[in-house]
Image (cartoon, rainbow, N blue to C red):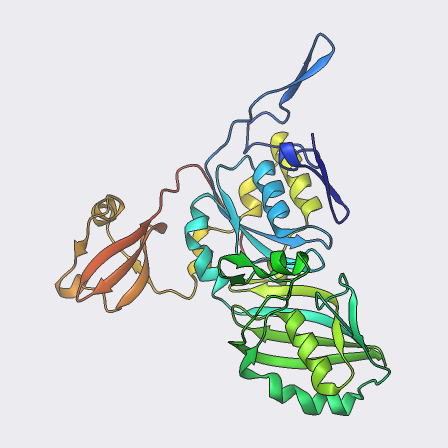
Amino acid sequence: MTSIITGQYPVDADAGGANVVDSIAPEAAPAVDRVRRGGKARQFKREKYDVHGWLVLDKPVGMTSTYAVSVIKRLFAAKRAGHAGTLDPLASGCLPIALGEATKTVPFVMDGRKIYRFTVRWGEERDTDDAEGRAVAASNARPTPPAIEALLPRFVGAIEQVPPRFSAVKIEGERAYDIARDGEEPELKPRVVNIDRLAMVAMRDEDHSDFEAECGKGTYVRALARDLGRALGCFGHVAALRRIAVGPFAERDMISLEEVQALCHRAAAGEGSLADALFPVATALDDIPALAVSRADAARLQRGQAVLMRGRDAPVVRGTVHVTASGSLVALAQVDRGEIVPKRVFNLAGLQGRAGRQEGR
């Protein structure tokens, strides 16, 4: 069995990370799947379950986003899982993980605004634009707080940004980081990104400044730190990075891996429910108008059939809506002149998230 080290988290490649946590299947499912016969441990195929909802993981530093998803998927014994926006291993914070039918709503979360807090180390540029890379340029110059403050407006709004060399951007079908790892220079073109807000929140010392940025999809904070350093004439790279919000999910919604594991063990002992850790699938659709229909119309939509509503029952909204019946999510649909055409249908049989907003989690 091949062993991989991902930061401080060892992963058995052939087991998909199974050595880190024991799987706890939803509710009354068995808590262990190994038994000893004749003094030897035997591995049995785990049963997987229909689990639907969003878990907002407070991802620790040193863990890849893909690995984090595999851990949560295993803990919940879920059939399907994915995440809404990669966080580098160096970064911590908000990683929304979709389970089950929530995977159908991932694009709506990924398209949402993101908020980052990060520290820039001045005086050195690195090939990865963060602390994990090798130095490629250095300077003895250091920026003053007034110089930094005066520069920030240039990086707010729609700006052109060249992605980092070590990024997942595709160049003729190949990832930029694969090209860079082969010792070649990827030809990355600038692209327009949107930064709504950028503020310096602290000047720790002459070498380190703390910032907070609110930005749109496709923005690289590492590239932002690099470009700030170049514009200030002193170079710079990201020394620490934490994401505190993605779309509808904020810092108050996050839960640590240790808390998830503890909840899973309590649920296996009949002392709680895994549903308490998951937000409903519809949480990802907060910014999309809701349209309530009858159970009969809901059944038609779930069969992929359009529904025509006239008269006083006709919907007043147009465009994309999320359809509900008796408070339950039914489908994502397009509405035009009273006709509701289903685009994505939801089947929420199984365990559903029911977590509510908690201030000061």
